[in-house]
Image 1 (cartoon, rainbow, N blue to C red):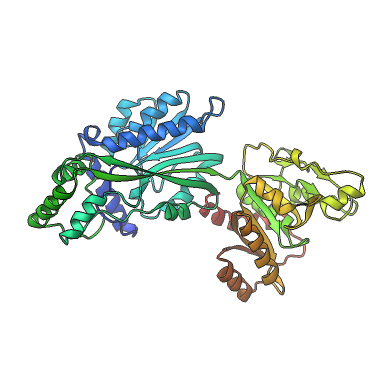
Image 2: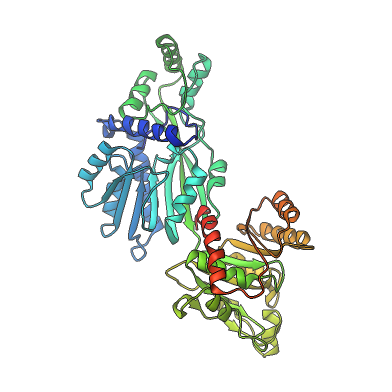
Length: 477
């Protein structure tokens, strides 16, 4: 299922959505000579294969790969050649294309399945796709679902048609007043907005030209590769109108422009739980998030141990963690001060170069110390060290009086350093006015409101985690 789109999706689901999916799969089922006409798909598959060659070393080659919209197996064969030991799962809506791909790569695992909504009970190191996602009705939601299928640090490498594709045919349609069934593909900026917060990615575009010869040959080529499924209620062109558009195209052009967008993204290794202040509820929220994500926990800078056992023990108890899911603090300090001041009081100096994200086989929840502007070592602030981690932030704030100023200033500081923010968690009695104001002014969603509870216990934390887990899954975590 890797052709150029010839109709506009409505984005509606339900029975109509299933009908559109069936229509797309049926059109590609009829493409018996796909490989003979899929010139640009082959070029893009080879380009993507070269990208993958530079992305992974021999030692970190992906072991579990999901390919979306595998078609007849053009990219699947490249993946098998490059990663002979990998488990490759390839999906497509077209049963006949799946059959041809299976013949080409018999040791891969194939499923007839909607790439926009895969139903696979496993995680992958790499998700890749060539000329498939232009068929998606909702890229942003689909990317979040796909990100959820990635392991921490897993990668997504995809190609799609971008704004400017088929410009010559569009011009011919416009000149002859023929409604153009080809949709308006997104540009790199729009595609960038569609990455979920759980993915850090970018897009690059490449312009290619296909020497189609004539307008009739171009349309015949689309039919040959199966890219003729009507995905919107567009009245078919009359033969006379279509002939005028073809004649106009032939006078002005003999090749077709393809703007191919190459998307590359990496899944976050976890979340950083930060606060607008000290004593704001970061530890309780960390326990809830750890439980929601079945994650590991790390409090790299622990202070105040002269008066308490520390946040690590609290999270261990509330999230019901065993020691294998606890990472010991990099610095455990006695004074209830900033890490920098607490270390100096003990005659120590924090060597920030030695404090790096630990390797984990699951998501990692990192809890900060105090607020974002707390000194860690000399002039280095917590927020500046946080920037080096590449983790999105879950910002914990009070729900009541004073939160607007503290929270908006914290969000401004994060934005000025280009640190991704997954969302806000408000601690305390519900305050609808503050919630609405924060969301409206910042554009950052409130993911959870944690009610006051005198003595939270593991059962209460588990109940809160079940509610938050659904929200985090929707963000791709």
